[in-house]
Length: 340
Image 1 (cartoon, one colour):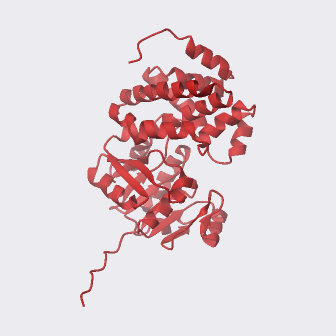
Image 2 (spheres, helix red, strand yellow):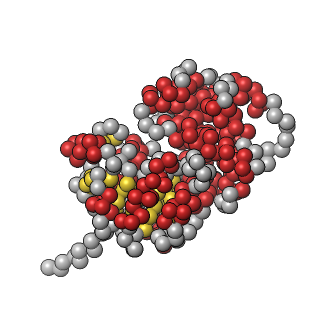
Image 3 (cartoon, helix red, strand yellow):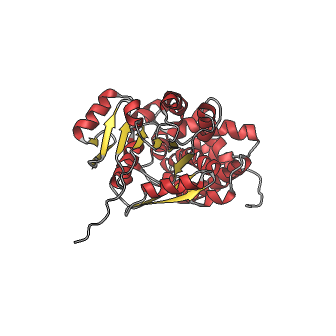
């Protein structure tokens, strides 16, 4: 009788952020065979996750695999972890990086699923990470058309992992990939991050447009011309144009603009129904990145002198009281020019 060699033990993965997306990523890592630790700073929430073995607040139908544990201790989460994956909103990224900096082992590899420019500085997540941590660790960004609920349910999903370190990007892709999940690699961190930031703003606009009954023609015009704006900004910041035709650009944009699992789209729909910003945010009950992102993207586009009339119109509707009808009228009355 011959014995098959045992598979080598896999290093623990730490996922920081116990919201819907952090929970879905932790579940996926565990399903792919990794001992996984999910961290959150809300002790009561973490206790509930540990007792129920699921995140009933966000992903109630997704049971935790046996190899997934939860903790409210950063030290415990990071212990012996080779890969650390951050899944917190953009406004919380800098603080969390500062908290983990003294706890990171020298061999750690760091990734994030955070989307959006930092509100106060207009910096992308990789720039924030470099400011806080320097260049000591390999880094990567995870993005693409991925609803947490569907990943948690095990439905087929594809995403992009971008890193300037090709070996790290490939390793992360293999770590996450399984029968239900496929990861592609890229070396364009800027493009992937810009796509993740701008698509949330455009999804708010799509919700506004659909909620006001402007129709399918308007929606597809917003998506197509919004993609052009996204690409212009990305290229101005140093991204590769091709990135925006992939999963992290066009794919993520179409997903968030057309499906009501998108919080940003639902936020726009609520505003179109006459709810105030505060009422719409409370109704959704989770962070709506597109609201804050509208100001940040508008500010960055202004700084870089990049024309983004759709983003500007959404910004005016959210922050200056312009009606969606006036915004659409202004867009339709712009001077005629070549599409490309």
